[in-house]
Length: 515
Ligand SMILES: *[C@@H]1O[C@H](CO)[C@@H](O)[C@H](O)[C@H]1NC(C)=O
Ligand SMILES: *[C@@H]1O[C@H](CO)[C@@H](O)[C@H](O)[C@H]1NC(C)=O
Ligand SMILES: *[C@@H]1O[C@H](CO)[C@@H](O)[C@H](O)[C@H]1NC(C)=O
Ligand SMILES: CC(=O)N[C@H]1CO[C@H](CO)[C@@H](O)[C@@H]1O
Image (tube, rainbow, N blue to C red; front, side, top):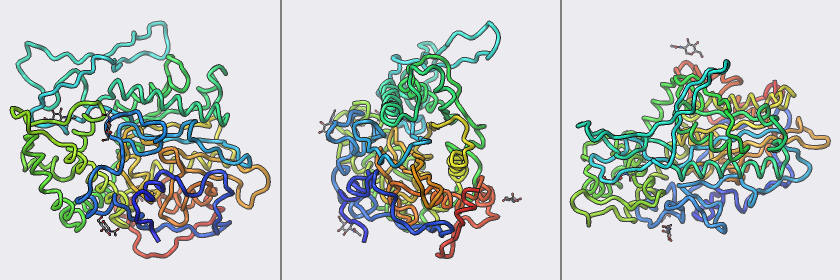
């Protein structure tokens, strides 16, 4: 019953050719008091999660890796450098029967330098960041003596005899590059065109300070999310005046996420261990590729970080390609270089890994995602519930800037039918609508968009999330994470079983879902 053809899989991933927004609410039988299925369901079979196809394949499914600019006629295809997001040109407005009342956006930061840990032992090329400023200053909120905005310029000293390990250049590793800042700004501008111009949810740029009361921005303690959100906010509002960002205490942040969750960590470790048959098979299948890459990069074959997964090689090469740098060559042997075929194989394996860890590996994958992202999911649930109950206050727009680990876990919780490694700027949007006129439900519906298109879940209670009664989504979130995240501490410390054993349907009353 699953589409086995990759193109179909990708079309589903991006929401093409399936139920479109604007149709009546997805026909379902989850009326008042109906049960919601909380169990894991296998993702669609595509070439992305077919190890044979990954190993024997060519190219990367027509995904883009070498520019942020997706050709207009292709917008919506996967672009690692700058993922598709909600924007006016492609946006599908729901029917007039639905009024948009609240939007929550979560997206991965935009393109950046690589992380320090993903450098090769000798890095011949330098990353220049002299075209941007990373501000670091503290300022009192009252009084007449504010700080002067101050920024860092990374300045290697010609005298200092010590060489920093890893990357060279004038960037922080990581930092959002100037091109990534430009993508961030455009992301904000595109959101304004949809949620102000098209739907009138957001106030106008000329409507005075209303937007300050209506919109909230949240980031993680990793500075690159703040670098992005400053540009997003200017893209939205064209202001250079200071804006407060919400950040949870770093040690327990739910957005990145950082709160301690030993059970999830153990489950994720298990999915990526030699004891996991599929994981072991993929590492064995990648052995030849690793040998070739090690010989060029100088990474020692016993360097664990580079060999437990393709992650480090993927980051090293994709960051280069997104910034139009050539693929790396062996130091001192300039004709021995990583080929595009090798890079493509790394990228295919990277997608296979994300698909395995967050979706394909079975109920442990769902349990790990739920435990490690349950707090954020419960926070989202509370935001939706507050609006439905008329207790949402003035806030109509909540914007989170996060990481691939955040978006992946969320897609895992939602049981995305086609899982990929979320690229730079990957966006998931939750749109809450009020149906005009009488409705058998509360009259509130949620549409979930990934890459600007309706997301399809493998879980039959969620299905194509075009217009899902809010009760269904809340019952699903509550069933997995507990209302107010009440199950998460227990699922994280093992006092509540994280992995659902029985294949039954766990019931959840609609009335309690809104309580
Ligand atoms: C996996 O891919 C291989 C090679 O493309 C193909 O022969 C096989 O049928 C695929 N398996 C599934 C389950 O789709
Ligand atoms: C990017 O890659 C595609 C396909 O591999 C190629 O056709 C295109 O010319 C490349 N674009 C740039 C900007 O290098
Ligand atoms: C685990 O979490 C529960 C809350 O669900 C708490 O009551 C219990 O004390 C915790 N156990 C340990 C060992 O921390
Ligand atoms: C991001 C990136 O590509 N970093 C490095 C990967 O490894 C080669 C070889 O050492 C370097 O030249 C790249 O700069």
